[in-house]
Length: 367
Ligand code: DGJ
Image (cartoon, rainbow, N blue to C red; front, side):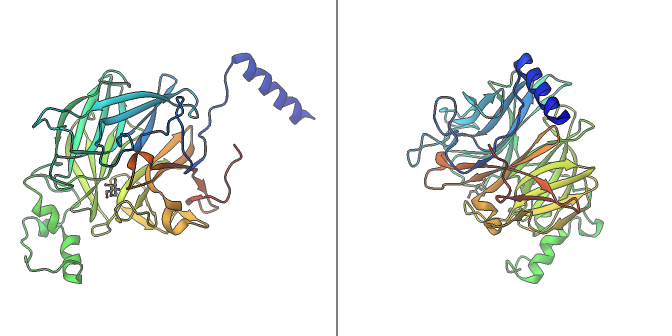
């Protein structure tokens, strides 16, 4: 009786305030329409909250016609995480020949963070230059005064040129490996582990492809990205403006072939969910844990459980949304024939009795 009375009291209070409880919807790969009824064209993205509004940024993937290029980075806004208004392109590609953002290049996995010290919204993204496929492997950085943009490109390039990772063995600095090593042999894996590609890219800067950003409780931000030909993840600290690297970075899981990193913190542990490298095809997700973001990181079994877990339920990680401690795994179900129609997977992150996070399609909350 007392419980019923409390429920009624809370319900009356909510009606009185005119507020609905905000929860993340569960999304399982069906079309996700915006408030105009169009499937949300924001892929490989993430969500931030600012002044009572949520902003979802992601890759624009054309208008659905085969071969249509990217217009830039899309933004959708919402008050309740369920109803999303299309706010258009907030970082635009350019028609100008030779522009770094010239149409025909690739923008992937954009993430935005707000920097309270500068009052700027800072976007990082995986950037490939026109005509070079995935060869440039750069990190792009753009800023805006407003979450709806327009974002202005600050710079784009490789990461931390001329600087060794802090966890790089002294003995391997400047080492020269045999150039006849065959890919995928034990000798080659050993060389990758020792940092053969880190040294290869030292002068020009480290490669940066699939990426995310993470802002820690102390306000320090990090750029986490697939580097070294997608073989090794790197975690690089950002400066106080969040627009540059400080030069402090680590390599983790050399030769582990991890893509699509998504970070979150829970009960004092840093957790990362990533994917393997199989292009647009889904594969088994990976789970990593650390006490400190700068390592040591350890690998745990697949965080997905139940039917479809061996292929991440058809998706690939992009972000973990933390809504007052309620965590949601966000992933893309890519459709390489029509990337704009790639679907969204938003599934709750649960914790088992040992405190290990897991994701399943088998205990979904009722909508
Ligand atoms: C996998 C990556 O995670 C995606 O972001 C994209 O780069 C595809 N590869 C391209 O094949």
